[in-house]
Length: 235
Image (cartoon, rainbow, N blue to C red):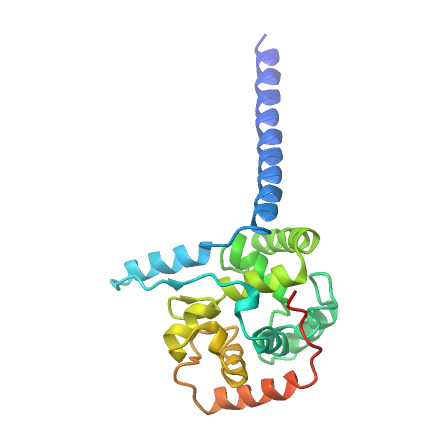
């Protein structure tokens, strides 16, 4: 009798686990499809940073305003592609050549690099949390596959440029334009866009508001790279 009760209990547990995974799978797809059409007004990182500020006894700093891709200068996508992911228009979420080069450089003791594409960074920013665990990396791969499947390259770029951290408490192009350049996103110059891109992927360490010699050097390199990049299809 006890054995039958145990078997029944285990079946119930497995059923709960199965339906939990089904629910999570379905909800993840629905979320990706929803964000294909609606603005991303907040991300997990924004909440995490707010809690960190509270924990440090600081006032909350959160600057974020959604703007459509056609309200941004054409130089902005070009700048981040030049800086972060020059094969963005060619790959399907993963740049295996960049991953291999990053792995070799890391093994040789060079600057630690991750080889993440703009698609991967977008998946991480919108759906996940910062970190380097295998679980998070696996989920990042899963969400990268989904956004590449359901979103256009224009939508991925639009969400990326609206959600990525671009300064202390600053998220997205409109916010960094207002806070660091006293203008709107549409008024950013080509040089401004290159300077913003130069802060990535560590915008809380490197500032587009008070750029030093290294930042200016990066800006010049990005501007040079932009001359060779194919035009980004804004529509």
